[in-house]
Image (tube, rainbow, N blue to C red; front, side):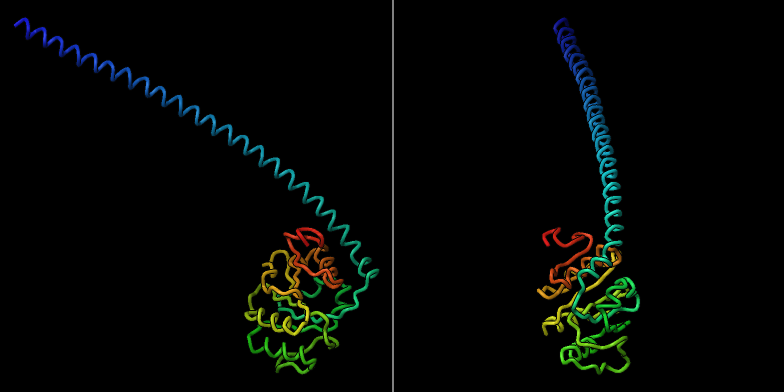
Length: 244
């Protein structure tokens, strides 16, 4: 009987020790996890604070850059007319534009001295595109039925394409390619809020201006007529930047 009691006490002691060990171990483990979580949360908080400071700094820099750009555009807008008059463009252009494009965006100098002929197209299908290519390549004034020239027609040195943003010009690429293959330089025009046209065609005689509603855009268009070429817009504001 004594041996049985001894073994019983031993077994009970072992289980008690095991229970105490599990309790102590779990207590320390939970405390360690809590400390680790607190450390992680504190690190995340510091990271968020740093990100907020960086964002504030970048916003401040952006505001300063926008002020500088606004001043530059204002200055360039005042000077562009004088610059174009002092550096007159000898070439003549034909403007083919969609109904939602306002030719006034081109400014008085281009409208009075460079663009002698205009053609408004609310839609552009493949048949019309092919017909226009033939007319311009052959130097014929006869347009397809329903189309009329605006202004004095002359064989253009450049063709300006302004498709607008309504999407009515489904076949602008065949028109551009046909003219370029005939060695007629083409300049695609768009406003800052519209899609860039730089990727429309890859050809040395193809250029584009995608911020035409700014004085910078007018200056870039003048530079294209002066022989610089290139594609200009929000990524490349002026000739000589962005690898131009």
